[in-house]
Image (tube, rainbow, N blue to C red):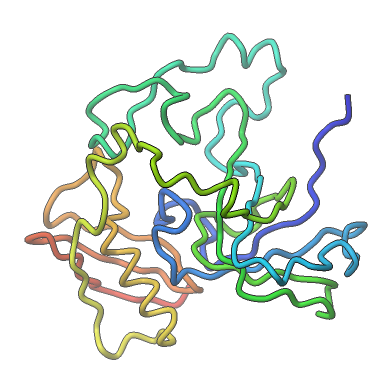
Length: 234
């Protein structure tokens, strides 16, 4: 059987997983770049891709996957059949296959992202500019496929328990003198509105922090408003 190989890596403003959106598309302003690995930097491989508005990325969890170094037999004994979805506040268990939790038997992720541009002649070969990312910097990509509305969009589909808590959970306040570009500022605001705090650590007044775009972002939550208290260059 042919083993999976890494064909590309995603470059984003998130060096760690904390602060990332829990799903692709939740923060449409967050942009990234797909850069192909040596051996796959062939412009012909992306010919025709510019005609699609969205693509599927099949990728691997590169952090926080406890079983990735274990052999196949050990993993089959250690995986957990239930997890605590953030959608339910982390207080209720659901079957792992009824969730998109990263704690899975295999470290595989699937994201539908918006394709902003296909750059065929960059210094590192073809690159894909994407938006709506939910991946940290350096995430390995195993495959790329075009999103097909005819086959991939199912209007009557049901979202199960995930439909119970959608949309923004907070408002956001960012200092007017924050050293961010307008695009980064809007992306950060959208991210904060989605409430990036762990489901089991949502205490008003507690300070949280995560790296974003070369800065350490510190914030607290009070009265359902995420207030940025400090933006420090890393």
